[in-house]
Every structure is written in structure tokens, then in C-alpha cells.
Length: 109
Image (spheres, rainbow, N blue to C red):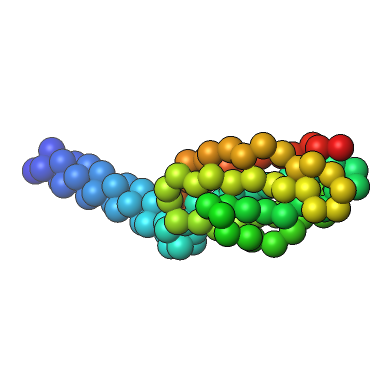
């Protein structure tokens, strides 16, 4: 009788543990709304840069500033283009993954 009770208790604890792990994973996905993040940093000292992602302007980023853009998972082409006398940085490709952050910096003069 004790062995059966121990088996039942073990099964219950195993099921509870799996349920908690699943809940945390589901909660994480809800918190990021199914999106990933592209974090861009402008390391230049005096060049304002325009953020272009797949040909769409996502605003500007001042010298020393970091901006984060939430995107649905997928592959994107992006570029930080200098608009105040500087050059910006070359175009690059990034793969955005759900609930993950991909970080890049641009240090044009």
C-alpha cells in the first residue's frame, strides 16, 4: 500500500513540475507578444542616424543612444544611415527570434 501511495505521489509531483515549466514558457511568450527585439546603438560622437528596416524608416537614433524595435520573427535587412554629416553603417541582415534580442552597434565618424 505504501509503494502505491509513493508511486501516486511521484506521478503527481512529476505532472506538477511539467505543468509549471509549461506555464513559465507560455507566460514568457505572452510577455513578448510573440515578437523579438532588434537593439541598435549609435556609437558615433556626432552623427544622427536614420534607422531603416526592410526599407521602412523607424525614426532616428542620436549619438550615444540605443533604440529597441520589436519585430515579428523573421529575417530583416537593416541599416543605420547618417543624416547629419556622417556616413552611418553598412546594410546588414538579422534573423529575429521570438522573445530574443539581437543587438548591433554602429560607430561611424
